Picture 1 (cartoon, rainbow, N blue to C red):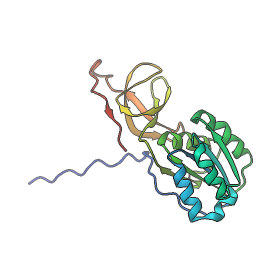
Picture 2 (cartoon, helix red, strand yellow):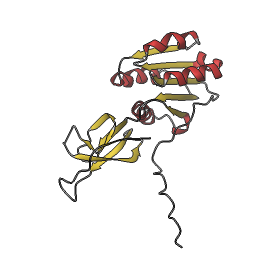
Picture 3 (cartoon, rainbow, N blue to C red):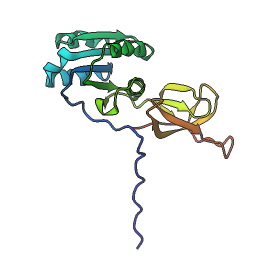
Picture 4 (tube, one colour):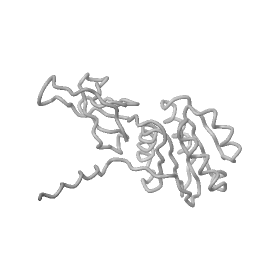
Length: 200
């Protein structure tokens, strides 16, 4: 009798998420979208003392701002889309102090974008926590033309930059903050499987 082969090992670069945990810090940066705001509220309820050190950025989540302000957030910025995240975070990083801890919550695309910016700014990976909430939509980079697409929910996916049909790999680039997409029919042009919904 032959043994059943073990399942393939998960790709090491694939992000893994957990519930946000309280950490001792000199300052805190919290970023969330509409889906992730509940995670920040839960963290604030678990560790109310953290909020007096917290600069919070909400992305398209204005309805959660009053609750976070009521919990004592030191500073609260809002943006209506992910395009506004980068300048808001750059502003807060300009005022950052030693001992900064970062708490991210929401869709994978938001987490990936913000984490990439933080790492580029010199924030160590060990100081960043992320809790995934909401959609399985991914931020994806085409390895051929380097176009970055937001909210990719199907695989294969047509690249908006070069038009190739891309296999959306589980390989994740922290530097770019995106999953990698490679041409799915490079060896067999025109043979593209039907798109399926991406699952976590």
